[in-house]
Image (cartoon, rainbow, N blue to C red):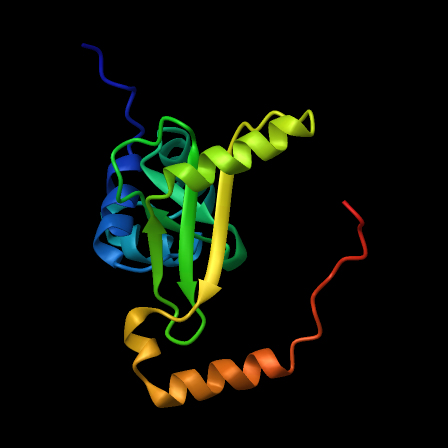
Length: 153
């Protein structure tokens, strides 16, 4: 069995993501691995791209940050995250049926999905038990204007 070619920065970058317990920006990762001789942003970005391609990490698009994958290899190149709007907790969800449904919907429109990242926002279990977090969430949503882009798809 052959092992994938290892980039020198890949191991430290992956280690930083795994130990973080929260999403990290590329520059936060750079700060975390600087003492291991990695000092250039392009080196970190190359390692992140490789980790994402290998299914070992995911990019959380709305946060412009990265997390280590918590599931064994995504054969379907899909990731779904729940993001707590109060405390910022990000959790990767196992949602095979949702991924299949999204792929089927796209296919029905003649679109081939190559990669998928979905994000759902709300309150985590801890914040659901916090009256202040519930009140803040209610206030946030009472002032939302709809966030529609005007497209009629």
